Image (cartoon, rainbow, N blue to C red; front, top):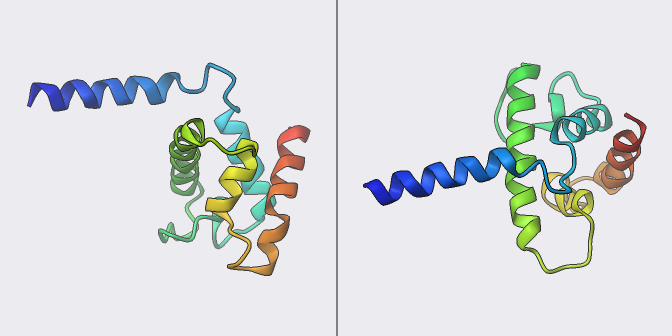
Length: 113
């Protein structure tokens, strides 16, 4: 039991500090995703959970998705930047024709903000 608590505390500390060492600004990235998605029905492009248009709830889900996938990207040995990696998860090209512009649009807004 103590080992599980120690692991959980370590993971939480890691996720809280993950934004320091060259990581993207998670809040800025979430804002960029929201602008690129441009949806009142699905704020931040969140469709996996029905947020009933609640922007705060959708933002939390979006930021959790960003943090989770950033941790995965750090372990990834590929040669793509984080927004491309996130785009493969968040808006895979095979699902919708609109998704092909997701990386370009999110990158544009991220650099603009």
